[in-house]
Amino acid sequence: MLSKRAGAYMFHLLTNLGDSDTALTVLNEHIARFAKEGPSADDLEKAKDRLISRTVFMKERASSLANEIGYSYTVEIKDYYHTYVDRINAVSAEDIKKIAALFKEPPAVFKTVPVQ
Image (cartoon, rainbow, N blue to C red; front, side, top):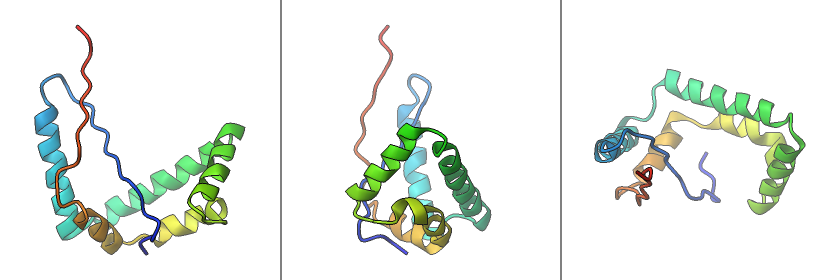
């Protein structure tokens, strides 16, 4: 189920110096593949498990709880904090395909390089 409040998406790539163009090519290939095929059932399950386990650890710090509560008000989902796991589990491979298909152009790129 796609949210009508879907927002920005960000990809972080960390490469060796000089490999950023190759990394962007690979990223765009993955996005195109996801738009066509979606994730495998195993990959989708692993991703869900990773997101859910991350939320368990986030609940250990008061600052993380405050961040989650603030976010729920920002996106206007009153039960965001309490329904997160159910909403993650509701995501299907077809949902991922639909999101990936929204990326018609290569993403905007911001490169940072270490100072020599």
